[in-house]
Length: 303
Image (cartoon, rainbow, N blue to C red; front, side):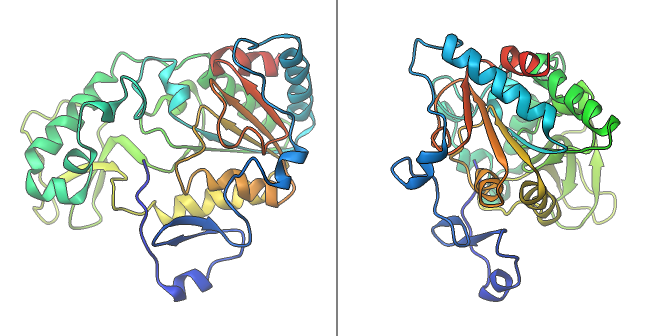
């Protein structure tokens, strides 16, 4: 989950109008509302199927339409979320059995929680990191890597932004992934700019210290109350604004500012495809909404 924090008025005014600005009540897109299925935005969508109609004849027709959009597009941007990694066995954050169903996010994933008990926060994240050792990319990860390679081979542009912190896109072969929420496979100093990739290296000494300043190192992920890395977010927003096809895959479309990338793409006139297990607030705003497992649908879109 992304924290909802504020920025100064000067910083807001300095941003292009297609960038999301942060406000005290959340994140918004200049000149555009958040998703509302009752607005006229719904008029341009292909409605999502009802439950029990997954991959029926109507869905198959939309798969063909989506595949054609992918074949024609020369600039594609993708937003992936926890639903993609869930198909590999990685726990999601919300819902039944989600990570936060049994833990306090504020206690274990915030600067305040780390300040109160850095050892506890470190151990919890380190257990999660090491628990990913035997998790493998699934067919959805591999399909996105293949799409990138195909598109770039013919001179096109492909940008993948992910809300996931597990590194599975890179393990599947995706390049230059924009990690909006950081990565659990790296650590950075809580006081200075020192950063180190650790992968699945065992950290036997407990909570590590920064070799430069001696302060505690912490997971290189975005916690509650923190802003996204500005360079990563700017690159993702620019890709959404410049693409001709935007795909949102395995994301609930409710976590901002990441969900705002869909709005940026729509406002810029891009075609849009959603691939998700269930209907989301974006389902009635995109051009094509496909509901089912990403590991099943994405390979079909490329075949």
